[in-house]
Image 1 (tube, rainbow over the protein chains, first blue to last red):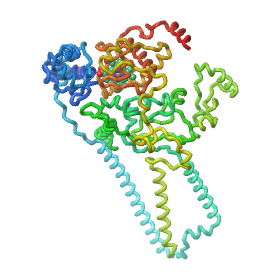
Image 2 (spheres, protein in one colour):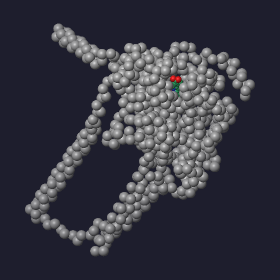
Image 3 (cartoon, chains in turn orange, cyan):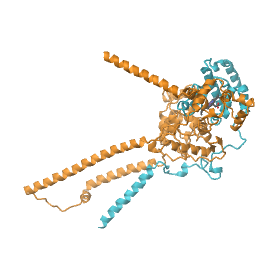
Image 4 (spheres, helix red, strand yellow):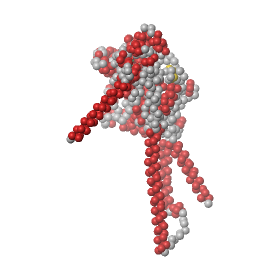
Amino acid sequence: MKKVNFHNLSSNLSLLLLAFVLVFSTSILAQENGDVKAGEALYKSNCAACHKLDKKGVGPALRNVAEKYERDWLYKWIKNSQGLIKSGDSKAVALFAEYNNSVMTSFPGLSNNDIDNILAYTSLPKPEPKIAVAPVTAKNNDDGNLQNIILAVLVLILLLLVIMFYLVAKSLAKLYKVNGIEEKIEPKIPLWKIFVKNQFLMLVSAIMFLLVAAYFMYGFFMQIGIDQGYAPVQPIHYSHKIHAGANEIDCNYCHSSARKSKHSGIPSLNVCMNCHKHISEYNGEEDLANGYTKDFYDKEIAKLYDAVGWDDAEQRYTGEEKPVKWVRIHNLPDFVYFNHSQHVKVAGVECQTCHGPVEEMEIMYQHSSLTMGWCIDCHRETNVDLENNGYYEKIHEELSKKYNVEKLTAAELGGLECGKCHY
Amino acid sequence: MITNMKRPVNILITLIITIVMVSCWTDNKKPNFQYMPNMYEPVGYKTYGEYKGFPRQMEAMLPVSGSIPRGWIPYGYKNTPEGKALATKELKIPIEVNEENLSKGKELFNIYCAICHGKKGDGQGTLVKREKFLGIPSLADKGRNITEGDIYHVMMYGLNSMGSYASQTNEKERWQITMHALDLKSKLNGEPLWSSTQNDPTEKETTSEKAN
């Protein structure tokens, strides 16, 4: 018992020591006039929407601003920039004009101390760029090694078997010789001749061959015109996995016309720029095995900037636009009518029901077959929500009576009639 | 002799044919064959199609300049600090505050705004939590005077790093979002719901019936 107690004591002591060291070290880190940690939090919640540390945003880059202006001026500017401009301060007026007269929000809620903390954070030296190590490739090698080992073992076993057979055959031959049995040498008739002579075998194999051929032919003809799995290379590598998956952006955010029109719409680039005006580089996970590195994604964002004509360094539109030639994936034949809003808005069908796990797709592909059978299956199985639909209440009641069911499916409401989709 | 010579050639040919066919079927970067393309491909112009005779061969074009959508009402406030101040002060919600509009507003707010501003409007959306987009203000921010006119104006034109939502929403939808945003603001401030402080809903209903 004593020992355990003593052990606890020592671990407590060490914890205390650790805490002490930690507190001490943060106080070393904190610069003379401001707490970096608190400053970072304030910076991120108040300033980061418009300012970046090392790059021009809506406002100027903020690293080392504290050296460019006097403290008192900065206090005044941050708390009420418009006031300072109106008071005729020459520096303030010049700055306002330089940044296209965009008004910086006033922060009367920030104390001088808060501002000191923020400035302490912005005065941190620029961190060295991290050199990318390639752990994934190493892991890949591991996988490869394992496979190689398994392969080698298999080959070895095969070799052993061959040697064993050879030895057995040899010893058997010896036995024959010892026992005086001679090998009879028959005239060699090739196997296929024997096969051809046997009419029954020929018939059976002919039937088998025809059946298999018919099966494959049927499969081949049935998949003509179906583009399931079609995943064309797009002009800009747009990852649904990052946007809809990791960042959980609602499908309707970009495909806003799915709610109200026939087409779900390819978002125009101004919608991209709602976020990408601010997000100019990729900082998420990298997939080195497939070459999806930060560098790769940054170049794709640069392609977007090039297409909308956004000058990221100057933070303004140049007016030189180049349309992006997206490749359309889902194509219904001309003789079918399909309306997105009817399914998204009225029926409330999830996008994923037809488009599959889009939030996991690095490269977009066609998930469903989009055949008529596929449509009909869904219409037969889906119950329609008839609640709060006063206008049609009577019709729905009659239909329920007619089909003798509680809940009507889309098919029972006429979802199988030819003219509903073909006209 | 001859048969012996022929056999490997036959085998080679079938092999090549199968390889070619299989590679055609499994290349998912190209669309499949179609039975009768002239039944699949429309005679008219297809949405987002590429045709000669259009500027840049793009079927998708902006409406003729000067044309306006049905039911469109001009928005009189300018995209300037002065315009914003004016809208903040005097622009009011022109549609009635009712359950339908509020729930629609909530749905739309969660689609378009929550990704940055958070479902509660506290400035903690997914993009903020994942540090993709920082510094999103809370709707109850003390330094900002967020009013109905201000919210609508910001959605119309955007503000600094926030883009415009005029292309994704129509006028009615923007007002519905505004209603929900004001509700969120009052909730964040711990006040009674903004919508509950509006005129008696029963009174409004009778007026709307008259209008119908």
